[in-house]
Image (cartoon, rainbow, N blue to C red; front, side, top):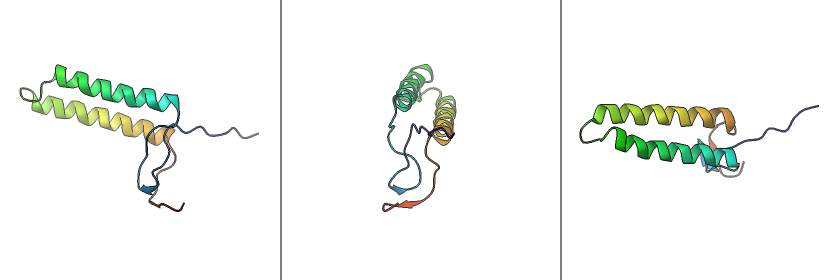
Length: 82
């Protein structure tokens, strides 16, 4: 018996990557990403600690891409009629 795969992030209709979340878990991940990004602006003010801020943003983006990769539809180039 095969279980149904539950994606949090659908593939984009055009191009490569993922769109907005389709499950509540995906919305929680996206909200947490935005909240942590805002908190990083306060923790690492870009005018004073630019390198630390950019490193923080890079780590957050890598984590978001990792979650999308694991919980999203498999990425591939799409032309809209797939």
